[in-house]
Image (tube, rainbow, N blue to C red):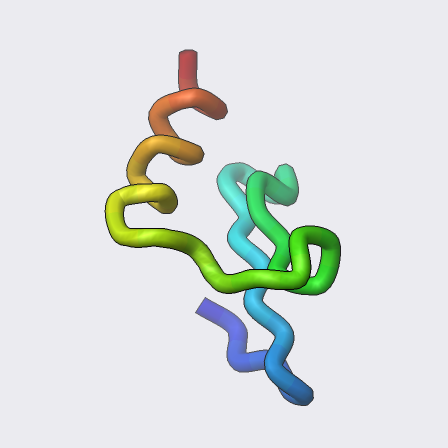
Length: 42
């Protein structure tokens, strides 16, 4: 993990952005990160 600043929360998997709080305007919901990772791997 690489700390961000200013409320940035971005999730990368193999250098591919799979979630960005900046783009969505919200934080992830419970279980959403695992689902995003599973979707990216399938």
